[in-house]
Length: 116
Image 1 (spheres, rainbow, N blue to C red):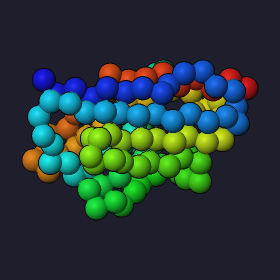
Image 2 (cartoon, helix red, strand yellow):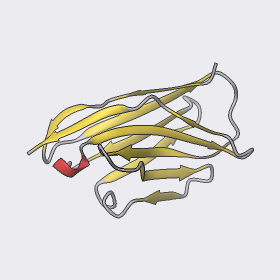
Image 3 (cartoon, rainbow, N blue to C red):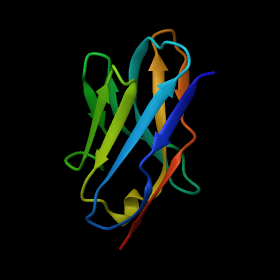
């Protein structure tokens, strides 16, 4: 019923850009925050960027100055614009929604691979 559908991942050379999108469907969300996490093989999932309902953003240090998280409430979509990509950005990226009621949802993950 509740789905978070991600798109925009792929293979890109270092220095390039990608734009990830995550569209929600199903029940109406009372969203507290939304954004993106990523997971490298053998490591724990880590925050990349989030945006709250009032527009406040939070970025991992590695993403500051390069990535921009944004949202479109009407389209029920959250975006991650990734610029100046580095090989260390290679990971599976997961869309994340947190609701005011405490529930959270994850996308299926999309692979981002940055070649040197």
